[in-house]
View 1: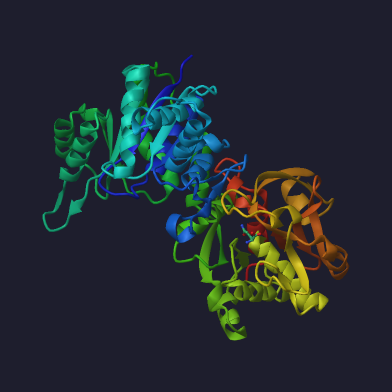
View 2 (view 1 turned 60 degrees about the horizontal axis):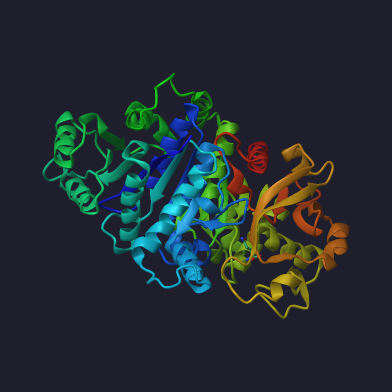
Length: 535
Ligand code: GLN
C-alpha cells in the first residue's frame, strides 16, 4: 500500500505551534489505529542544529540513532511514544550536501545542477523515504513561514510531489494566525488571506486552514475565511490558545481535524479514536493532590525552550505522581557566594543541575550541588550536572582542591572529568560528540536499578567528556558510587551518593526519552523523593 502524505505549512508569523498541531494530528490518527510518523524540514543551511547556540534555536534534541535535531522531534516522540530517527529531520544544509556530493561523484555528469529539478528532487526523495519504510501516513512539517526566500524550493517540491503521486494521496494543511484587534473589537482574517495567496502563488491550494486565535472563531469569520481562501467551510479549523500543549489533541478532535484529513484521503471513518490513556494523563495533570518545587540550575534560563525536554519530563512524571511540579529556573551565574546559594535554594524540595557546555556558570552549579549534598536535598544531575557533581565530590569530600573537568581547566592536575582518547583527535565540531543511544548496565540494589526495575537500559548521549576511570576507586571508597556502566567501553554512566536520600548524576539525557505514555523512571523517582522530603 502506498503511503499518504500530509503537509503542514505555516503563514503570517513563526512560533504558531506547527509542531504541536502536527503532533496532535498524528496522535489522533495513531489513536484511530493508523501507523503514522512526522518529519520536519528546516530551511536553514546548517547541516543540523547541533552547532547552534540554544539561544538561537532552543534545545537540540537527540534521537536513538544519534541525529542532532530540532526540538519539534521531541514533541513528536512525547505525543506518539515512538522513536524518531535521522530521516525525521532534514535541513537545507543536508539537502545541498547530498546533491553536491553526488555532483562530485559524477552522478549528474554533463548536466547543470540546479534548484529545480536537482534540489527539489532531493527534497521529494527525503519525503518518500519515510513513506517507503512502512508508514501509512507521513506528516511533513515545513519549518519557517510561507514567503521566506528559504522556503521556496520546499514549496515547489511539495507542489510537484502532489502531482507525482496524485492529489488524492496528499493533504495540505496551512496554519495561520487570526489576530484579535482590541481597538476594533474584531478578529481579522486579512493576514490569513494574504498568506494563502502566497501559497497559491507557489501553486499550492491548501485543503485545510488551521487558525491560531486567542478568541473563538465566529461562524461569520469561518465563512469569510472559507470564501476568500477557497475552502470548504468545515475545513476552517479553530486552534484556540490552550492551557497546555497536551490539550491540543482534544481541541483538534473537537474541531474534527482528523476527520477532515481522513475524508480528503478517502479513508473510511471507523470508530472514535482511543484516547483513554491520554485523557487519564490529562486528568492527573490537572488534578494534582501534592506539589513540589524544584530548582532548575542552568545557564540558558532566559529561554525555557533551551531545556524543553526537561520541563516536559517533569510534566509527565508529575502527572504520574499526581503531583504539581513547579520548576524554578535559577541562573547558575547568580550563585556566587554562600548567601546567594542559601537564599536561592533554601525553599526547594529538589535540585536539578542542567546539561550544558563551556566554562560559564560552572562554579554556581558546583555550589548548588554542594548545598544539595550537605542539606540532603534530592539532587538530579544531567550530563554536565553529573560531571559537576563528580568535581564537587572530589574537591570537598576526597579533598582534591584542584579537581576539575578538562573542559573548564585543561591544565588541571586532577582531571576527574576528561575527554576520551578518541575524542581528542577530532577536529570538526558538527556531529562528532558521543551521540545517540548506548547501553548501560545497572548495579544491583542501586537507586537507578530501583527506578528502572531492569538491569540493562539504553539512554541517549550528547557529550565529549567522561568520568575519568583513573579516579574511580578513590571515588567509590569515599562514597560516590558508579552504579551504571557502559558495558562495551567501561564508561561510568551513573553516579550515586551513599548516605543521601536521593543523589544521582547521569552522563546521558534521560529527559529525551520521557513521553506521555512512558514517563521517565528517573524523573518519577526524583519527584517521589522530593515529595517524601518535602519541607
Ligand atoms: N559539556 C559536557 C561534555 O561535552 C556536557 C555536555 C552536556 O551536558 N550535554 O561532555
